[in-house]
Image (cartoon, rainbow, N blue to C red; front, side):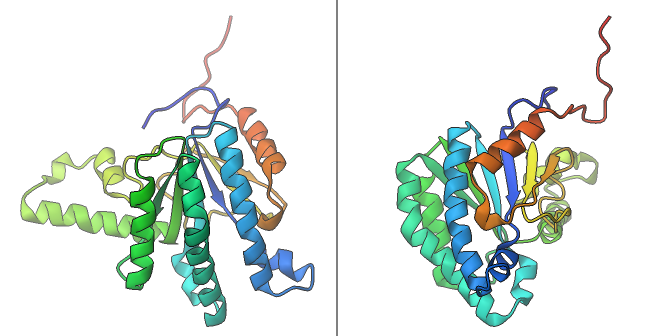
Length: 243
């Protein structure tokens, strides 16, 4: 994990896309309208990230906690994801976007797993922008899976307890091989990270914007990047004093 002293150019931006329901309620619309409009915001954000030269963009699309929402809403959200994959992956592929899905898959329908696998395989060689989609994802659950995997390696004799390092844990996470986020943006005015990338965001800068996700665009994205650029990232150290 490479550390940098300047906050001028984030390599990896993560976004919690919040406020779809409140956006819809403010307009007297059903929550589904907010989720549907949020897809347009996602398309704008992917394009903006590419235009801004960001290497990695991670989006929190569906959390493990989202399963507790009303069944009709969950069904709609899953169908939105299917529709996004069917309609947008080919265009993203043509634009040089690589897609990686993080989160648990064991309990998903076989057809959904196949769609996610196909999207990753199709775009695997692309390098303009790495789009990481956190789906059926919860950071505590991710850390639990990583811990279990490491424990099994110790039990089998493949790994000694004394050899477990920070890199060992990072390598067992869903985000293995992906640099930690430099910047985490959350829309909708809430100021929490909601079980998202807890390990990975140890030294991320947080920017909370008041706009709901369906209104997120390149201008708001740029504003968040400007705020990030003004930060002094010391990673627990002390800024060198000039004479």
